[in-house]
Image 1 (spheres, rainbow, N blue to C red):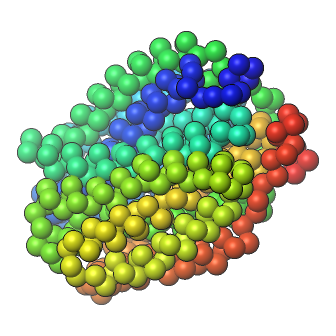
Image 2: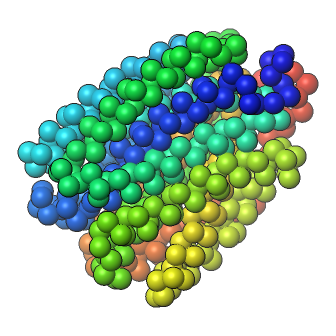
Image 3: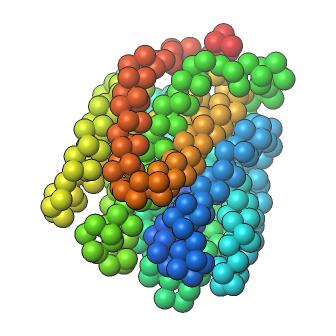
Length: 414
């Protein structure tokens, strides 16, 4: 990378920032129905399970398309593919607004599924590009920063959803779609003026390498840990607004702003996880993941028991910080276990499994809530899941980065 090796405040930064903004708005689109869940249920006459499906079906679209998207990104121009995804998001945003206005649940569900496919292109391309722009000494820091786009988007969606709902709760879809189109124009300008290629310059992987990457045990162990983190994170992001309305008698607008703190903690936490890994732990990834679950598990227990509103704010912030600490490095982690030519594929496998956790979490807890009519089942799910993550994190792989620091690469691992 020549003159870029000693820093990251250069012509690569505008590319990373515009990708971050694009994905932030994309994730606001994903989460926004949860911020107005009572309005959605009332206007469409649906139960909590069907309402939660509006989030989960988008994530299901991401799960099913993640690996094919990774294969495309390993072979084609990344920024151009993001352009097609942006056009797709604008289309599904208008479709979703129309379906919401007409109270057409199944049509809305279809638009949300397609929205999952286009937003996963934005996410995976952003991970792939930021991974490729920086060397191993700064990679987790920069990738950790990029991954804050998801909690920032969730916070944006939770906060703006109720505000935009005054003109109809589906109007936010259109607002986010138009915003993404404008941001993509800025991305193309930034990419054109970036000296480092925005599509990684690696050999196209062979079919045998691709198959072996898909079944690599280390990739899957990292992916399962990501599954647990994402599932716990999405469950609380999805259910906390309704919990505050039902148990604390907060208004929908106030609860949305309050719960926005939970994903917003990830803006510091996900970036901080990358910084800690690159500096304090000298490039090691496992300690950050372990400490994430070690703090999150008891925080979830306290969150389920606390009844004081002020204390709830503090615990919610601690829970949000801790569970997202590992999320900041999972995608640098997965990329370092495979050869550079398979980086997008490894990231896609990890992302697919992670998003599967995010998809199943709201669905499982929605079914548990309908069966028990109690939020105890929701909190029980995240507590048990986080405890399993704590056990698995103790035996997580630690990628060897010496070969990459010396300019070779981990091909021998496959």
